[in-house]
Amino acid sequence: MSIYLLDIYRSPNIGVFIKGNDEFIFIPSGLSTTKTSKLSNYLEVKPIQSSISGSRLNGALSSMNSKGILVSKLTDDRELLILKKETGLNVERVPGKYTSIGNLIVANDNGAIASPILSDKDLEVAKRTLNVPIKTLTIADYFQVGSMLAVTNKGAIIHPNASKEELKLVSDTLSVDVEQTTINGGVPFVSSGLIANSRNVIAGNITTGPELMMLSRAFKV
Image 1 (tube, rainbow, N blue to C red):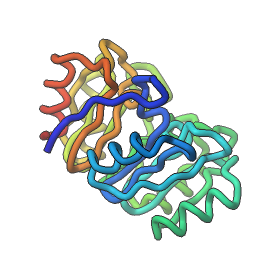
Image 2 (cartoon, helix red, strand yellow):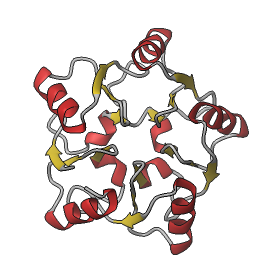
Image 3 (cartoon, rainbow, N blue to C red):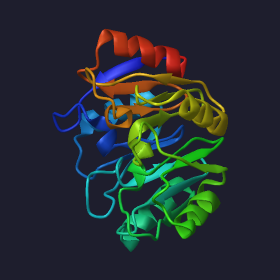
């Protein structure tokens, strides 16, 4: 198990563009063959090229575990068909007014953390699709919980200002240990600079040595 450093479109905010689990990663349409190959090989997963909502911001516009995939309500029928066909998973649009689903829901195969701004109908769709218990809360006074957390089935990292109560709730819901850290040289919105699964971790290319040590500790790599 290893940690790799990478940039996407010359940006260290790799988690904004890529979303993945233990089986595959969603890569924006048109990403170079070299970067696609690196991402696939580093995480040991199948790459799937597709836009979401006509955008290359796949990380911000989707949330997933190995049981299901949630996408922005603006995802078109063609994109939805590609994701369903290539993954074999249940893929559902979150129907509410918010479109950056990756910033509002984060999940592994044990549970999910959701933003309190989501409606009951949104949460019903999320629970049914991801097939896990869902806990709603804010983290460090932010409602964008998907930006505050990066999660695998082996561990999680969280915004450094998260409270002890929030740490416990996240750990209990996701059934993993949670570590407070930053990414990309001090960025507290940790999911923006990370792509991880149960095998390996890819961090933004300006992530520092101390941050890499925390990633290794958190994700058991």
